[in-house]
Length: 125
Image 1 (tube, rainbow, N blue to C red):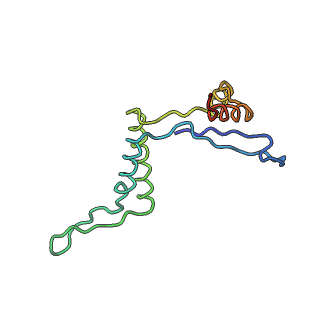
Image 2: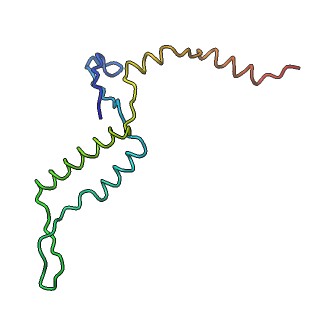
Image 3: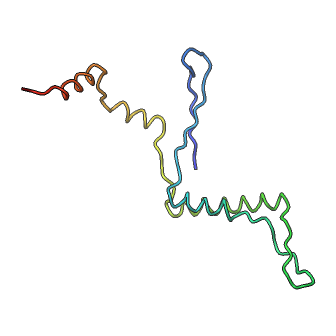
């Protein structure tokens, strides 16, 4: 997953401070979101077998914080590799690409939109 970083010279309307804009250039598709939800719910069971009690039942031991982090990183790397390998990452245009597309779109002025609305409501007799 990638994030585009853009610094805008004059951030807010009347301020002279720069503004940093973050923009995702990739997102997950529905299959990847589903897999992600499964992993969030079930992927971090933080216990391992630790022998048996006197009745023969399994004993569990909580993972250490470092083991939890290691497991999370391993699951993350494998998951996102699978997302990429299975084309489950959707590309999103960059800010510049979106601006280029927007610049090519001819939008009517407010006056033209009002005239069109009036023309549509006017019935020719």
